[in-house]
Image 1 (cartoon, rainbow over the protein chains, first blue to last red):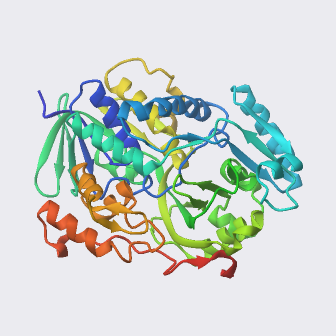
Image 2 (cartoon, one colour; image 1 turned 180 degrees about the vertical axis):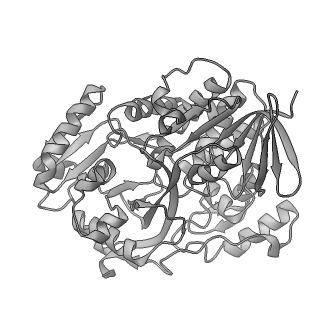
Length: 386
Length: 83
């Protein structure tokens, strides 16, 4: 018997979810976090569980399943995690986006999403403060949100109660493969032995992969977000612009000057339970600098006050940036590593980590326990990168 | 009732101690777990108190408690004034 059944590397929402679901299956787990809980992406993001933004296919399928898990998590975790289903709208203010969005909505309907395109009158009925020259919008009823901080806290609390050992503030210096187990060494000379290792190191997964000689093609996608003072709701549904979808799915079609393109700007606008609006966001590839920039803040402000002119009189109280783990093809990696028994990878969720955390943890616990995953994972295997 | 430490978000000393017992070990983690320091003043009032409570509860010195991050803007700024 080794010290642990599993060592999970990375204390973000993905690592914590994997830990929680493994503990529920009776496994002993040590979670390793070099900085702080949620310090990479999970504690520096918005709060949305978007279905509309997911590319039709496996990403959408995962999101739908994950949303179902979120519905029962407040009860399972015995904590209010700020889960709400308010629906969502993707505002369209460019004629050239209409065809693309029509096509997109049709594909999403195919997966059973309750989503349609509504006209200007309807848009302004739901969101009276949106600008005059809006053309149309999508409208989906299932888009939801959670408070990621509360999810982190609830996972830490419940997992600690189930016996999770939290090993924090240490760097891993070496990972040794033995016959059927692993030894993980830390920079303070301590070490642990484990049957399984699960790499959930977000934007740093590539670095951790090097320790076990596995190429994990993931880099940072920095997202800068603005926080407003607390306000009464402007409308019920959370908001995105069609630019966001275009920026996410077809960056080459993105409008605007080169600064917009370089920063990957696409509007997202949601209200937290406490009343603060979160205004996002940039999508800056390969950047690992936590500071926010005046340029991005100005562009995001310009964009949101263009859509909602009433916000010109509203204060920004904070800005922050997170490093979302972006894989080479933009899809998550939820996979065992062939030829390295007991090694698993769960990362590369991009901006969907919060949305996909529960399903990722559940699937990973099935993989580690040698069960057949409840959703086929071939498309998310690390083998796809060769 | 326990003392209010973060006045903007009305977070009490008991809530901060509870966050520490739930695993929070830095000012940032306390902030994320409780919202203390996330309000309009962004921790200008309560930052020091939280550092002291964390030091006391975890048996560390205040100077060994790292500071919570500072981000733009320095004070609340109207969006209409940003050019």
